[in-house]
Length: 260
Image (cartoon, rainbow, N blue to C red; front, side, top):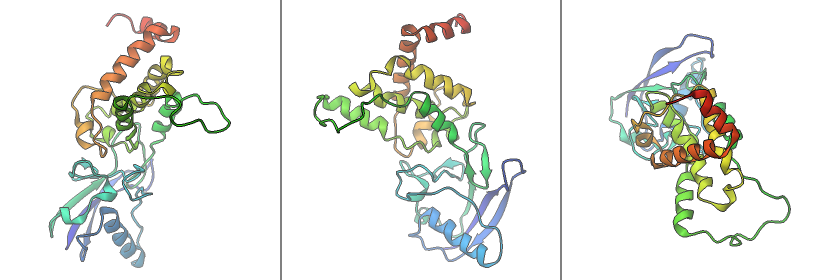
């Protein structure tokens, strides 16, 4: 199959970007989208031209690195699919495909299709962890957990931190990501020691990074490659209120914000 690619090219964070057109003939429909980009880069390299920079790692749909907006949709229009698992057979011969990086103030473009997602790491460091004792491994069944709670925690923990939720949200909010990380610990006994401050601190860091507020458009849920439900945001809201009521830190913030 033959396709026409319109790819965002940007030399570095300070440079001005632009869309550049590439004709890509002879593509095997069974290739993944990233393999198609590999083919294009090999041809560019053979022609002595600058290759297209894009993120990738596992190529198995579990690392979240393959962050591309394809025809206006993060990871493409196939539900529950990462870019590396999107195959060219979902496109038609002769199609024009537009490829861009994530668009968010908190995800500055590094080069071409690569963005800096270190903001997610800082949100994790703010509260997305549990306190554990070092030493020998504990018995896995030492603390019985109801299957319903274990399943709910597992569903939330499926988040791979790709940032598609941010790229899809009209406010560039990362609330689905934050909520998933909060919810996975809320369900489990291991997450209780930091529970009083976890949501408060992670939301504070979220805001400090420049992400927008959630306005319930639910675009995040629609594009999430792991199909995480916005129900976790309701859990985050509850945990945030709980943190505000149980900690002096939360009460001080509430007083500073004032009524409403």
